[in-house]
Image (spheres, rainbow, N blue to C red):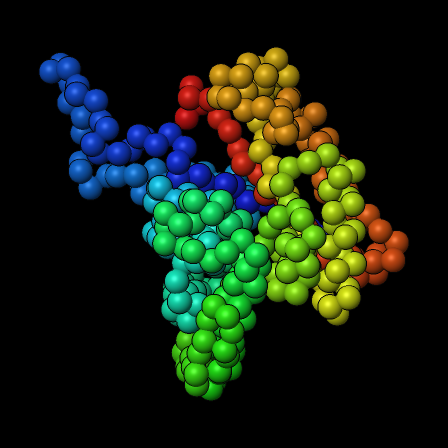
Length: 311
């Protein structure tokens, strides 16, 4: 069994950090030697390099509507961390599924196949409308499935045609060299039956929100059953915030200062390791799926939090 850990780079964290316009005026006794060429993207690169140096397997970039585009941030730092997987999150309303697939294969060629696609959970109707997305709630799962069907179709088949409620392609498909790289692994997320059923049909990895191990166990078994009915298997992961320090008291104090609370895992190194061990133990949960699970590679996503003094 292998556990993969991904550092979460949230572009909204410390929003003014490394922003040129937010630099304070310095006293006349010294000067700020940072040039205007050093900006927020250098900060993202520093975080990714820290993840690489501490043996994380990749970096996850959550989608944030009012901040830097997650795919652009991933592309910008790709060459800074040549070993790490890069998983930007974006909504299925991003636009053309064909052009999204074209961007993905170009990214794969750039990074030697290190891209993953995380499709964001749909926002509420008002937020979607403000982004020009007017697809009704009842059609969001269908739209996501069509988006993935078209993107995979033009990547793997030529000519490719598809006519759905949200996407339509006639005689599409990529030629070499775009069709010579792997399609990115697809990460979907959610806890309700409709999203689990969608993952059973279309995801490579399903991400669950942080929850007690017993709750996650039930959801994983439900996902397994749905995927098995489709003749598929789906890997899974947990988006879990973690704050660890030398002592439990230090961890609690830093968590209070940073506004980190349950369901985050907070404590000294040994207790945090024990809790993460419980999550890792979910990989061997069942009897009827045990044979297949031996070859599966579950994923633990960790959002690491640090107090300002440690930065």
